[in-house]
Length: 389
Image 1 (cartoon, one colour):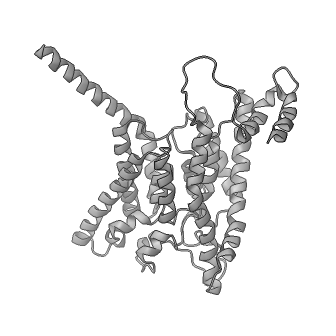
Image 2: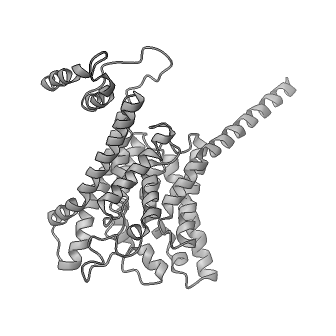
Image 3: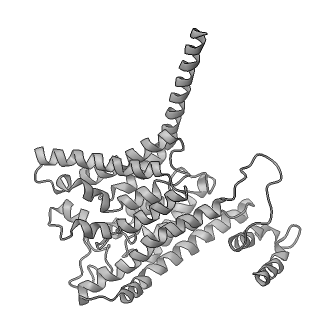
């Protein structure tokens, strides 16, 4: 490590203050802080004294994503290979999935970090670590059939319009990864929905089908999967959103490290369960032929992108509610609206995307009313104390 430190210091010399390439210092400093802990501290102004910095938070989220990422890579290969040859080996499935998935990750990081570096140099500030997570999330929530150039365009929109236009990391009001997915969904709808985008080569090779469970329910066809298939993730869907087991493993890490809000996660699932139970009751009583309404409430929690969205998207500390009570309300409404959208409008089966983006916009309003309510309660207590004095 000492040798690397010495070489890096040598490389940084032309970029130091007063030298030829001073303007490009943020780019080289980003590499330095990625490899080593910064050797400087805040000298003035109010600041938080804590060992947990932005880099550690982002790395923790990346680690929490690893189980879903690896399973998604394997499931990509499995969903395709088992339809054309039956038996599939573990490494065979991983290998095939890697050839499809890794290029998406490379494109996401190359394009996104390139824009981040450009804005850092233009504005004269250091490169933030926020894109470490966003760059991984974007390909994880995309269908495997989307062309790489569409991933690149979606990343450009998410970083420039969804993030940098608001001031960069910590200033955005919408989740950047979901902003990328929403852009792709509305800009390239035929590549983001239907029954040919969720499994590699579906619609191209005869006998390979890629229709999702929610798509089948919306079309009124039988679902050939058990609840255990849905929970384990052995179903078609967005690359890393299918395995609830792997997602919950990541959720456990986020909760134990206090990086992710357990209030948002629990209330999100509670809200989804409540809405699904209401639809089950309505379906059984008034709409017996509506498959989406009669889909068991517990299956709504483990199918589609709901679990992934609640755990990794809704808990984004920048775009989520900040107050304790606000987090309960925010998460509950996300779960409720996600199931409502997927049932009422089959054209948007992944209602979790729209639900989170909607609540991102209303998160400041929720916090405002929570704070106002607390202020009113305190005023009432003060008045009561004055009267009794």
